[in-house]
Length: 592
Image 1 (cartoon, rainbow, N blue to C red):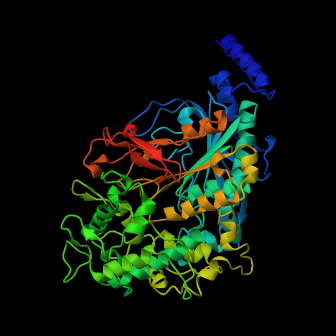
Image 2: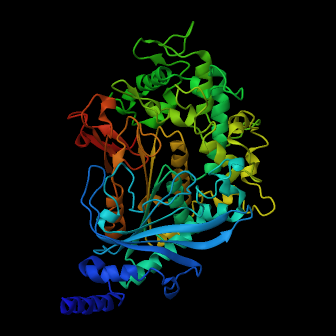
């Protein structure tokens, strides 16, 4: 037995030596032997100083070897791999709290030669399992496909940097460096550290590097293409909050706009925004949108593909209830079959987007799309209303934009100087938001709080020349019924990119998803695989002319299954005129 182990170690040494020559042979063809991989993995423990970390203050806290695990109902099979977790740049912030940039890296024994970073969410502050989440409702992960995968907490810890007097888990915004770490520095540092560890483990650098994220993770993807164009070869940025400080302003606008339709007040005498629309009311609005817009794309199928035509055609003040053929807005007393004048006025104002007293836009408008609601059996879709309204059954305000993390993060993380307060005061602060004097705070600096929030967190640049010139590819996607960030805002960014960089479709494409809510959910085809076409684009120059998608909840359409093509903007999916309306093959991507 000892002789066999010795021979395996000698063989493993030979593999490592050959792998370090910088050749183009994929590592998956010459994987390290399991015994050697385990030894190399355990060698990370306590040997941080022997590794050429890009940032000297990098430590490995845990190094663990994992055996392969079979697939289950919610996840694909996991290969045997090495997991290391560590931290970069431990320090004490000006708020007196400890900070560090945490990371977790997983390296499979049968590596495919690729590096993968998964994006964060919300305001970060938690370290994921780092298996390489692909989004799009995928059970597979990048790790299950033998990528080396990494994630970070963004430079703060919600369990540690949690000050109840500064709105709890968003309190990292009280420290200027923590803001910068969350905005861009942590992703740069962790990417570099991860690639250094990969080179140490396999004896060679990755052939290609990929990033996928949605929401905050989508913003991170856009930021990386702009600030660090050499870090990643392919990026998927879903529902990107690329100008989130502005979206926070929109949250105050929607709250104030919907307040006149609210019924009742909370303990702080703030209107109960969740009572502005019942589930039945919101579904009625969704039905009104379908009645006006469903056939504009050539097929009445419960999906509005021609969203541009819908924005021009739909007005809740003049639309009809398709089930009664009567006006959507009540002509008399409020009934379940119509919306009150206060509801119509409020939702029109909210959807138009925030403006200052001079009428200047402070964020973008929002798309009329039936995914604002949806009925599956007897269950109403809650994805859209959870952001703007909150649960109707609640006796307190509970929407993200009223007093949830969306509102809290604007006050502490994006306003400069930050505005710490108890959480019980947030809804009232949103109701008193001044659209002339408050918005400039996202571009302000104060004392140590520099740069401004739009500088450290925004990802608005349309100069992607460096990313393009090295062969980088960017895939954007956004649900049309996203209530966190406007899909129209992402479409406007893509149009600006095209104007600034003619031929941008050669390296960047946008896929809008009708009916989908924030990152997933809603009456749409919200399940898709973006990684496979991204790799094909980066490595084989095969541009994605469409992406196959399917409905996670086909019951919204009274179907057992539904598939559709997602089309590169500005194209839309159009029915061919024959064939199963629930089958992707019956549709073609065309100019609107």
